Length: 296
Image (tube, rainbow, N blue to C red; front, top):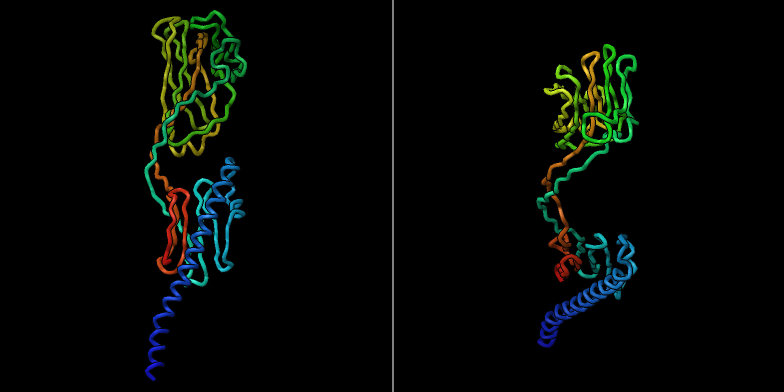
């Protein structure tokens, strides 16, 4: 009877020890598979530096135990290797460790092409909205500096010189600056430069020269609203003169769009880890270079 009790005690001690040794052996094998898989992946990445398809890395998996399940995910430059084994309790999945930070996007300024805006070689792309009321011609010897300008002469009751529409897109908060030189033969003349984006969207400036035949530079700034950004798809310039029988010269029309710097939140994945505290799993993250073992 005493012998039976002793045998029972020894068995009670030995079985857990043996089970732990078995688990330790399985875990060691899984860790080895994960490390060998990562070695293969490193070699594959070196051979294919321009690839982005992480699914191609599945071919690099080393699996010595058929009960071990190894998965690869993430991205080509931030991948993970996750291993579980159905013989070691409940299984875990993998989850990203994320970090949210503020990122500053630098502002930009770009010059937008204006249809023949310098009028150096002619007025191609421009026309009169009413040839019976407004004569639109190319003036080579205009009072404005340069080789040429567009000349408007009012001969009737109304009319404008218009350019063709040019495609454009804006973002909310963009700062639009349009400029142009103008000159007139009389100080009583009144003209205008309109920047038109559609039937109901335009910004304009009335011009009143103070000295005959003197070149004046107009610059006007306008900030794009959310509604404008959604509605605007094109733009054009409209030039006009308000007094019959008088003349205006326009030249060097420019348009720039400045997008201010912005701060936005960016979520980045900074490695991966087993996603639960229960169950077993081993995860390797390429971004951190670390192996994380859960309940192993």
